[in-house]
Figure (cartoon, rainbow, N blue to C red):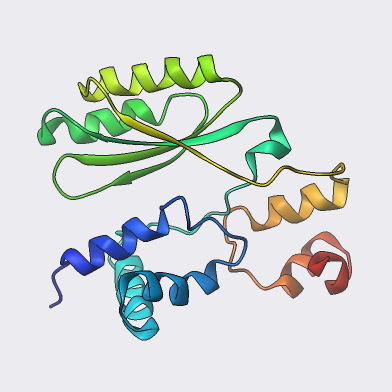
Length: 186
């Protein structure tokens, strides 16, 4: 039976690193492998094992926050008491704009959130810090490309179809919303 080790943790952290967001989640295996100095098959096997064990409960697409008038940031912090981590996570999930919580071994957490303005980021950072009893969470902004042009109804349908399973085939998405494969690819 495989026990999770430091390499497993490093791989999972790479999935959430600021360098990681990209539209094609399948490409990240090679990028993660290169950044960690291991082979792609090792990354693939370990992520599959993490999924099977529920360490990675699901893959979700992250929408560019600029499409919804927001910015995005991640917070790294430690909960004061590891025994209170589940309670802290349950409370953080209720905060407006939280889109991802990574629970690392020990006391570590990473929270990714959307926010409309710097004051909202400051307030949410303080709130999350107080929930975890972490006086100074480390925050960094995630830089997404600016969105040019308006999204059509079809664009939003495609995004909606792929939110819960970004690895879903584009042909399946096209069929679900009644457009051509070429339309989805564009």
